[in-house]
Image 1 (spheres, helix red, strand yellow):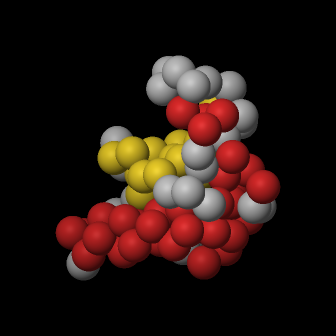
Image 2: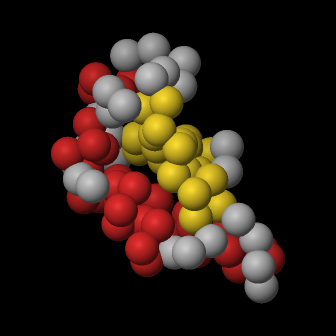
Length: 81
């Protein structure tokens, strides 16, 4: 089984959800890392986003972004299956 790393900025709008708790509970293979800055200047203030194994995932709402993150996690996990 592989590991998936989800990086979030502590200023990201995705943080309206308990993203770390949700993802790590649903996917034991996932590690959520929170940083003070992911160097995508301004993006965190404009829309919810995260980086999943190096791929930027973003959406208009935190809920939509979470669903896109889950889809990307499934894609990443399928590589290791």
